[in-house]
Every structure is written in structure tokens, then in C-alpha cells.
Length: 115
Image (cartoon, rainbow, N blue to C red; front, side, top):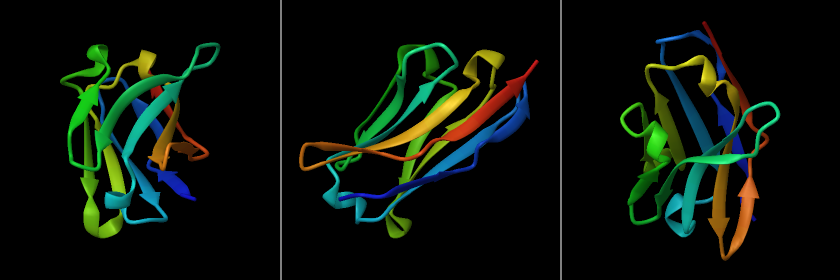
């Protein structure tokens, strides 16, 4: 099993930045892939960015250039740096891990971007 704990959400004005973190209960090298998803009110959950245990990254096309996913191996943590935030980025952001073919999710952290 993998437990995931997100942190770093909050309220920010449009144009501002936030950094989300997701701490995993296991060595992240043992986890096939980790990533961030988000779900806005009334919408489906969507991929924001993912990173493999080899370090490869990919992003939702619409977010490239504004969002950056990274990892801190010593802390078993992945991060999501979000810049130039827009009101449309308002959502609950979830961390996900894929471990031995099973998806594990955090409980989410709310990001609210005011105009």
C-alpha cells in the first residue's frame, strides 16, 4: 500500500503562485509513477502532470509552461509548482501513485484562485 498526504493548497489571487507537495509512505523509486490530478466543481477529474520513477515527466497540454512537477527523493515527495494561476485553475488537487498496478490517491488539497 501507499499512503499519500498532500499539502500546500490555499487561496491565491490570479497571477500568483502556489507549490503543492505530496508525501508518500514509501520510497518513491519503488512507485511506478506519481502525479497530480485536479477536479473542478461540476467537472471530471483531469491529469495535471505525472512523473515516472525514472524521472520522465509529462503534462496536460494546456498547463505546459505554467506548472512544473518535481520530486524530492530524500523526502519521498513530489511537488507541483504552479505559476501564473488563473481562476480556472480553481479545483481540488489530488496526488496519485501507481504501485504494482494499483492506483492510490490522496485526499486532495483545495486550490482557490480569486480574480
